[in-house]
Image 1 (spheres, rainbow, N blue to C red):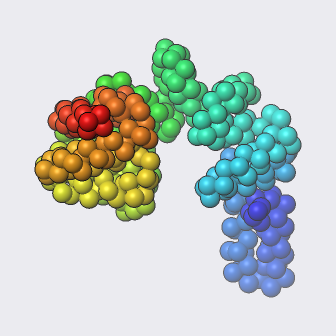
Image 2 (tube, rainbow, N blue to C red; image 1 turned 60 degrees about the horizontal axis):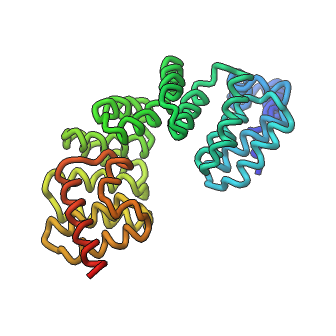
Length: 325
C-alpha cells in the first residue's frame, strides 16, 4: 500500500498546510512541523528527479521497494513493472527489478533489466556490480571482472559482496577476505555483510575478528541463519566442537535446507566421537544435494579447506559405505 510520504503532492500539501497555520497563528511548532515534509520533498527530488516529472511512477517504485523489505516479492515485481510502464526510461526501476529477478534466479530477465538500466543511465554502480555477477555465473570471468572494477571505482556497496563470493569459491581466500572486510565496513548494520566477514575471517584464521563479526551480526539479526554457520566454523577451528555443533544445529533450525549447516553438524558430531550421527547427517545432506556425495563440493560452494574439509571427506566416504552396506 502506498504511504503518504511516497506522494510529492501529499508532502507539498502538508508543507503548505503547516506554513499556513504558522502564518495564521505565528505558533513556532507549526513551522517546525512544516520542516519534515518540506525537507523530505527536497531530499526526494535530489535522489529521484522523476518525482517531479513522473510522480506516479516514483510512487509505484517506492511502494515496490517497501514490499521487497516485507519479502512480498511477487507484488514488488509487479509494482516495479508498473513504475516502468508509467515511465519507460526509469533506470532505477529497471535496476531494482533486475536485482529482484536475480535473487529469484531469473538470470535472463535480470540481465535484460541491467542492460536497459545502464543504457539509460551509465552511472548506476549497482547495475555494474550485479551484471558482473551474471557474467560470472555464465562463465565470462573477464567481463565480470571488468564490470566489478567499474562498480568499485563508482563506490558500489554491492560489488564487494558479489566479488568476494567469487573469490572465496575460487580459492582466492585473501582476496575474498579483503572484499568481505570492505563490505562489512561499508555496511556496519547489515547482518549478512558481518556474517560473511566472520566466515572468511575464520577461513584465514583470524578467529577473534571472526567471532566479533559474528556477534555483531547476531545483535543485528538473531534469526539470520548464516551467522550461526560462521560462528560454528569459528568454534570448530577453536576446537570447541560442542559449541560448534550447537551453532550448526541452530543454523539448520532456521534454514533446514542449508548445506553448510548440515556439513558442519556432521564434522562436529565426528569430532566429539558420534560417528553414526555424523554419517546419518551426511546421508541426509546428499539426499538434498547429490553433489555432496563428494565432500569437495564444499570448496566450490564455500571455499572450505583444511581440517574441516578433510574430515568432511572422511564422513562422506563412511556415509557412502553405510548406504551401500
